[in-house]
Length: 347
Image: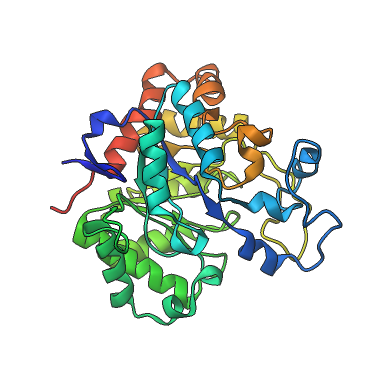
């Protein structure tokens, strides 16, 4: 068994410290623009250290914060992650938000960091008309092709499915994408990352649907459970046998409540995330938990005043240890669990 990276297959022992859900190059601007009905005077300004302060509350105060298309910027951030002991990044960017397989391969080769690329379909609001009108069978075939043959004519293969996008009210288009992911996982054995609405409990219905469509529970990861912390929700997911992902480390935003916009409430603090991980670990769930940053904001990058991809290594590890977790627990979260999740093949 092995893991597919953008430069080829590797053994799970070669992964090292792994960030299981990140974006190196991405573009969420269409999603932000379509929901921002009353732009502030700064909305079109570029992110810089001089206006970084605007983003500590609402990260979408500046539209420019919603994308990064610079390989040079991404490379510097990857090198900082590697210098901090990092080994692998899982990039779950889909085509709808600017997946770039060739760029990911170049970044991996230049940085020496393993990159595992995702595939599948994001939120319905970002899907093309062609995707939205496609059958489940057609969508599944495209995912399977990305995994088995490579994306387009690049020959670069995806190593994980996702992140599959589902909203607060899962749309018909999103349910079709979920079903396609379940079928593709059953066919290829690849694991699935699912984006779920940050303040909802949709991961329960989505995981049930994936299992119904053929995916094994242990190949499903429900993302973003750590914005609005609900221990009971986490336990209900874990009791289904799926993974859950604390993937917003470094995001400690206070979002004003409002009727419009992508975000609608405060994010948990890192120390609160750690406390919940400890409680779940004490209840025997440690082997089904993944942790990462889900960097999808320019302000999270070091070059724009953030912690970068090395935040887990440099800051969160000590927070976990101080919070009562052992070094063995930390190794499970950063090395063993990601390897077990990714090292999946069809039986």
